Amino acid sequence: MRLNCDLGESYGSWTMGLDAEVMPHIHQANVACGFHGGDPVTLRNTLRLAARHGVSVGAHPAYPDLVGFGRRSMALSRDELVATLLYQVAALDGMAASEGLQLAYVKPHGALYNDMMANAEVRAGVMEALAAYHRPLPLMLLATPAAGDHRAEASATGVAGLLFEAFADRCYDDDGALLSRRKPGAVHDQQRTLAQVRQLVDEGTVTSVSGKRLRLDADTLCVHGDNAEGVRAIAAIRAIVDEA
Image (cartoon, rainbow, N blue to C red; front, side, top):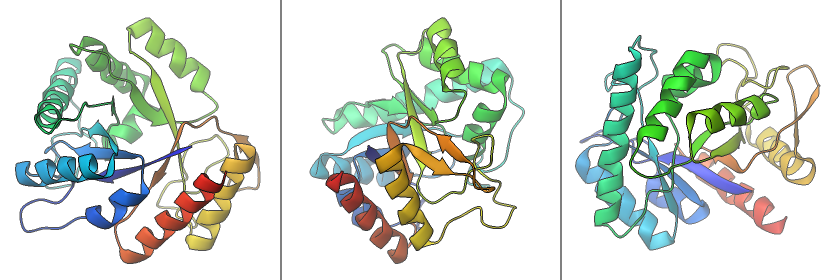
């Protein structure tokens, strides 16, 4: 199990996350591409930080929603969605290459990620963009009971592969989706987060909001380091993963 985290999301004088504190504890950095966060200097510094710690980097593209931090759905046409993704991935790919890094995967951000999981048309557009890119790049998406269907979609579209992720600090609904943040208990405290990580590592399952055990075949585990408590939790999660 590898740990991934969304990084490089600061913009100008506005700081988001504790990238320098998080980077030593993770395996994969999902680096913003400038459309929801991340100015050019921030992205370059984030890539250099990843190189220093031997962390794999992925593109973290979003809807063009800098004001809303990419958390608002947008009704893009298929052509707009594909072009928007290609533009962002290519930009980060070029910056990574300039720092001696090779972009390893793509993980959509925020509302685009949620829409991709809930809407087959949006997911098809995301996969079309990756299939159209000039070199193969896997897509990271949520590990759910529908993983087999998603693999079939990726294969039919020509996507290089899929990386399935679970979330350390989020409660799951009974259908394998993340419980809406509008509902109580959607985000675990540190004790429940560590218990969920232990269960995922030991059993490959999570316990849903109603107590149902769900099988998740996850390749990677998403963690969040927006504050000092979050960084300490990531360090504890890394210890559990390394122990396993």
